Length: 95
Image (cartoon, rainbow, N blue to C red; front, side, top):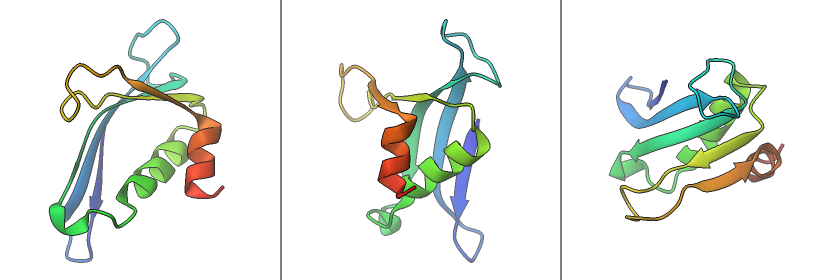
């Protein structure tokens, strides 16, 4: 799936590519695990809570999601995916 955040002029501000998977790692539209593959943010919008907006969108569209893995290999080569619980994400966005 692709989530896109746009500004008031309908220009792209940021893009998030994600997959929903089940406990066995198979792609599943009703999966309980979110796998964030990549996030690209326009340099002019860095530090403007874009990641929080993505997290809120992901949690609202996928209420069944209990965990999230974030692959940041493009930035940190060789690093393992980070695991976040739904509770950690809810705390981050203030819910």
